[in-house]
Image (cartoon, rainbow, N blue to C red; front, side, top):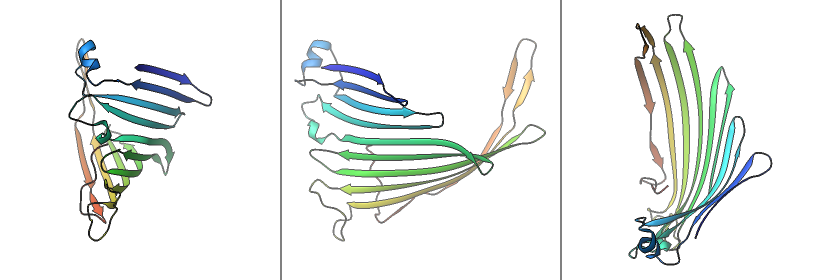
Length: 212
C-alpha cells in the first residue's frame, strides 16, 4: 500500500499523509526490485505564518529485513516543533520549542523537550566591515525509560531524567571587498569568528540518546 495526500485547511493549516505498508517483507524486493530495508509512514499537520511555524508529526517504520523486528524500531508520536522570529532590544530574536515522544513495542523509550532562545545584533561601520553578535541558550530535558519500565534510581543510573544546558555566544567579523573586472565583478569576504560554548549534563553522567 502506498498512499500520499495533502490538504489545505482553514487558518493556514495543512494536513498531509505519506503511507507505505507491505503485507510481506519480501514483496517489494521481489516485485519492484526495491533495496529499502524499512518503510516510512508519516502523518503531519502544520501551520505557517509570517514569522512563525509549527507542526506535529507522527512517524512509524516497518522493517523489511527478516533479522529486524518492526517492534524494535522506534516510533515518533507525537513530534511537535515550533519556531518564531521577532525583533527586540535593538536586534532580532528567535525561539524554538521541540517535543519528541520516542516509543517502541520492544526496547527503551524516552521523552524529550527542547527550548532554545537566541538573540542577534548586527553593526556596520562606515568603512564597510560588519560585526554580528549572537547569544543562544538551549535547554534539553530527557526522560529515559528502560524496556522494563524502570526509571532513575540509585541502583539504575542509566535511566531517568537528564537535564542539559547548551549556552553559546559568538562574534563574527566580515569585510566584503568588491573587485571590478572588465567583464565581471567579484566579491571577496574575509571572515573571522569567535565562538564560546559549553556542553554540560546534569543528574546523569551519560550522553543523551542520539536516535532522533
